Length: 110
Image 1 (cartoon, rainbow, N blue to C red):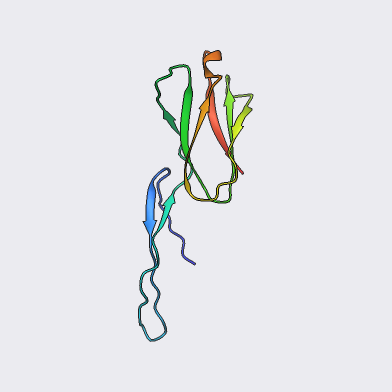
Image 2: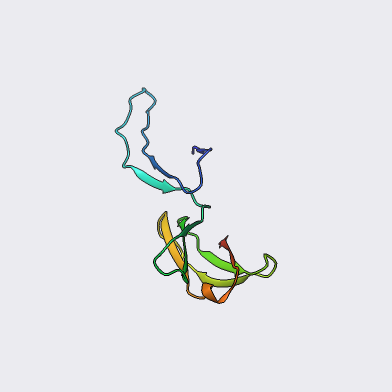
């Protein structure tokens, strides 16, 4: 097993591996795997100014709660994703955003 450190949140990385046997003979490269580093939340502008949208990368095998707060003290779950079956970007829109003068958002990883 190898750990790859220093990956930037929200960035897409492409990996392929090769192996050597005890005689030093190298295998062909594996198929390429795409990985988006989770942890980055991006607000997305739209045509409807009353609708707040965000996008974020999800990690395989995890699900996320989208929470909102008016005061950064009390948080309410306003949505959730299903369990991710791949490492990809997902999008969420808050249709109630226009009902609040100010609203903060956070993701909770499960």
